[in-house]
Length: 512
Ligand code: AHR
Image (cartoon, rainbow, N blue to C red; front, side):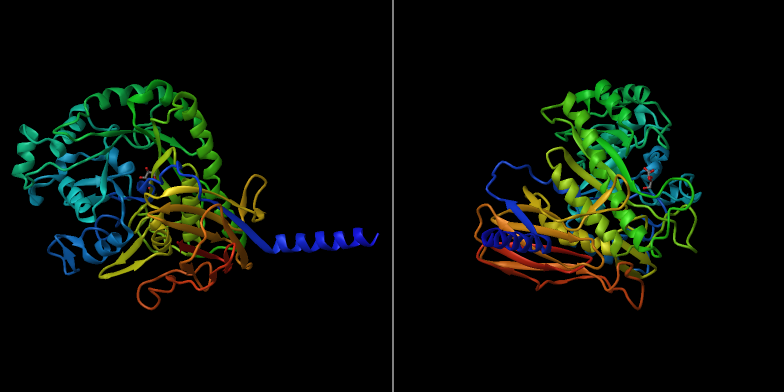
């Protein structure tokens, strides 16, 4: 009887310990895990609001400090993020864009109305040269979205030739416009949202159109195009299925757009003013990208088991109501610690499918939706999302490591839940990086980490945490309210690591 009692006490004690400590295990013995494509940390720049004009580009004559017309502060900020790829010129704008309007002397470039985005007049002063030179300055791959919706096959074919050919009439024209050597352009999208703003097509029709346009997107002078089909929006599995069947291996990648948005009709909620329930709802919606990705990937696995076609989440992020007082149609929204949580949780998902997801482009790099930077005149602030990207930089190009985590789940709707701790790990050059997200607003977590192989001897860590979940960086007084700092809450133990993870925080550890 006494023995049973002792056993019971021991069992209860054990259950209490387990409930209090979150156990994380890192499977670091595996050597053949997929690489996390650096392009998962990609950016998206569109002629929309002040993303390009004012955000990236002010022109060489501007009073705002610039390098050849590009804002110096934004350039420096993006260099620090090691941006791997930048998508341009849209979005919806891409299927209205005629590249010839954006080359040659600035004064003779025609103007146009940006009908998708507030009817703003576009002067085309930022065009092909300006974009591709920006990518060279940032050391990133350009990803061009071609115009299928309102452009011709010939127009698209000549654009590719203009950018990438060494000789011939298009190359000569480019040289006359000041660029001797061709650029290297790898990623080329055949249309954007061809089911909607890119032409309102049915998937069967778009598949044929894709095949036609893609035929004339040729490889010049050693440049090798990677062709991307305009893919589905979130739950449209039929679009993916039809494209896979009709386009198949004629595409290198198929895109997917998934926004963390309340709905397309009515209010999308405020970026700054939200309740606790809305906070958890947002994270639940962001995490729903995982089952969505899984279903698209299952369709891909069925026709492409050898994984020759990649999935590219080339638009993702939060979409809230435009900030009151800003121009309608410019999609300007502030960015809080909640957005940083969405970014980090999304990366943890993308990493899990690193064998199929080879690119993701957050919408958008500056002044639009879930931006990295916000600018106002001379001023610039780095958003909490920027800092999440910064914390996750070490995972770019690293080997993905499987993990398990014993954290409980918070149910937020009938079908959605949010883990109390979410983790991801990778290895590069003898170092393991472990990122942990604690979305819980009032619950710090004790985390115990064990490895399969590594006996860690060295540790350093950084944390992103704010004084409130709706904290944000604003021009002037609190430009630096949310920022990354050194984290002292982790220590080495005989078995691995022990971490005191504060509530509502994101941490990245470097372990050797
Ligand atoms: O990112 C804003 C818009 O969202 C893009 O232009 C479009 O592709 C999507 O609908």
